[in-house]
Structure formats: C-alpha cells, structure tokens
Image (cartoon, rainbow, N blue to C red; front, side, top):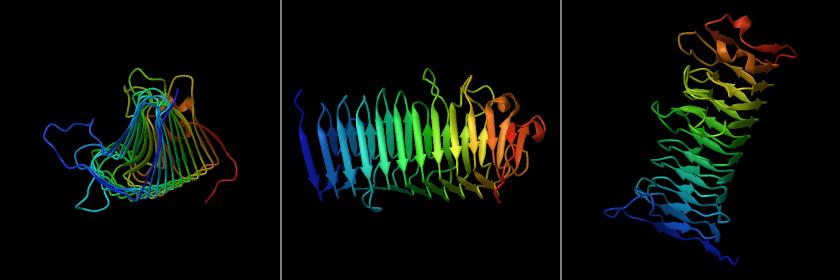
Length: 303
C-alpha cells in the first residue's frame, strides 16, 4: 500500500476555540499510514489536542517541538496516539498542558519519548491505557506537574512501560502509578536509573485493597528519596507475577496510611509477590510486622 511522507519545519500552529469543538479537532491529524516528520514547530490549542495520530502503520516523528510555549499560547492535551499508530518525540517540551500531555491508547499504539521535558502540566505527563501497547521514556524530566487530585504523572494501565534515566522532581502528584485497566492484560513497569525526589509520593502498584490488579514490574538502580509520601507503595500485584525491587536507594520518604515514615509500604496479602534485594531504607507492611514484609535477600546495603 502506498503511503505519504511529509516534513514540516519551524512553523507556529494554533487552533483557537470554536463552538462545538471536540477532541477530534487538532492542529495536525495524521492517519492512513502517513509518515510525518515535524521539526522545530510550536503548538497552541487550549481546548483540544494539538496532534492526533490514528490508524495502523501511521507514524509521527517530532524533534525540538514545543507545546503551550507561554501563558498566552497554551495547550490542552499535546499528543493523542490511537488505533495502533506510533509517535517518536526527541527533545520536545510540554509546558502547562491542562490535560494529560501524551495519551497512548487503543490496541497496538506506542510512544517513544527521548530527552523530553514536562513542566507545570496540570494533569498527567503520560498515560498508557485502553489497550495501548507500549511506552518508552528515556532521559526525560517531569517537574512541577500535577496536583493532589491526580493519581500519577506517568499512569500505566496496560501494556509495557519502560522508564529509563528519567527524573520526576518536585511534583504535586504521585510520580508513577501501575493500575490495571478493567478488562486489560496486567501492565508491566520497568524503571531503571530514574530519580524520584520531592513528589507527593514515588511509585504505586494498585490503589488499595479491593481494587483491580496493580500489574507487575522491575525497579532497579533508582534513587527514590525525600518524597512526601511513601517511596514505593504496593497495594496490588497481578496474580502469579511479582514486583522486584533491585539495588534501589530509597530513603527519607514520608508517612503512608498512618504507618509513620515509610520508604517501602506494602499490604500483607501481596508480600509473597514482592522481592527486595540490596535495599536502602525502611520497609513497613499492613497489618503484619515489617519483618514479614517480603523476601529480603541481604547483600551490600547502600547508604
């Protein structure tokens, strides 16, 4: 099948509000296996997503673009990746988005974000949900985003998310949430060499007892420090799977559910699904004692 390849450079694209406008209106819509490259462009669309990407085989590549560059030129959502399409973004800036900046949704959709910055966004930075297949974030910065009513800045509801060398700093929300969407296969989080500091809390698996599965994951070689709530909270894990915490530095994190200061906090019914190796920080469990929290394999504890 033939497809169209288009390159756009150094443009300012603005979509003002019009009566009857919906999420189907965009500054740019990419579909039908089109291959679009966008370089150095500035987007403003305060009432609908800036870019919509649809259809299997469709791909949008963004380099050095800005969304909502100032208080006068704002953005709602920045990018919607839908219906088995792909987006790749390098060195893009997402500023003051009023909705989730990047949404990856519907079966087969994927996003790969490298060296991107999310600053002062009001809700999530990235959401992987409703059948989205994959998210990769490398060397990204998420800073001063969210508020206490938003569960996470990176929300993983399905598929597999890789967070590599990313920084979540001084945010008003939980940094990362793994919570399985209803009817979806359990999500997987792989987080390596990331820094989570000064957030409402660090990483959460599940929302609490009686909720649906929190998926599974591997957290390795991360710095999870000085968050207001717990560094890692594990309320739910997918059946027959595990959460592995390997070689993380996790300390100075705050109280959780009346348990006092807690770097790792987990519910008793998931303790057999949590593995901790070479951990630095406190561990608490509800309602059991900390000594029953999980299988801890002592090694060289980091300080």
